[in-house]
Length: 274
Image (cartoon, rainbow, N blue to C red; front, side, top):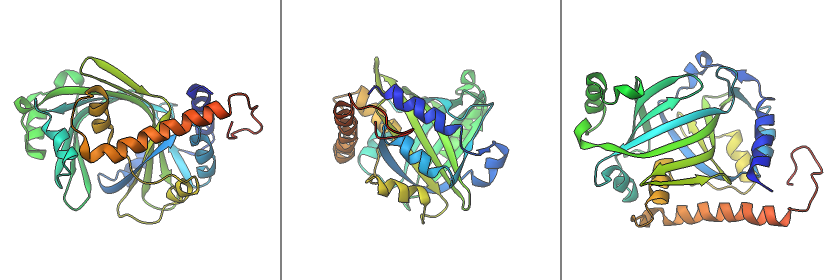
């Protein structure tokens, strides 16, 4: 079965969630948080979302519940930021310029993972033509160890994202599909997987994690930036990520095997394991 079949199912289910708008999201912005990631084969996502329906609301922006994101990541010429992740450095940064296409908003965003495992995100609004304006340059130097002339754009990342908000606790869940990476004169796509990230103030109980466990999904996913670098630069060192990259490949293989085994099976329920 083509991944598009499941993506259409996903779009259908998103319309069934109670919606939340950007103003209502203020209470769960979670700019200082802990987070855990999961890789999901795309054919399982409709089933997972159906179970999450009574537990979460969904962000809607200008009538869209699957929002288009466009990010440009920056690194040094020697890819120091990538290598800090690859080597497991306790304190590390990501620098990106992200455009939220549905809301027409753009931000320079600095993500700092500190040595206590917390992710702290800071951002400043601007336009793609402003990178790096004096104001953004000052922001970059204030919030990171880097200056504009230290870094350069090295990776483009595009995807569709849904954002779910827990009805009873300060928890957010983002799920990204249709991932596309552009860098090193290459384009690599991952249509067969989704990347989910559970974001909380403090790591605790979560209904979505319980659902993930039901489907035998385990915590552990490579960051989109690092995955993009590995995918577009095949010779780069990624020793620390090998286990996670193998997990990603096994997830893709899980989808492929499922699709082969069910190619001739008719759809017996609305969101069945076709």
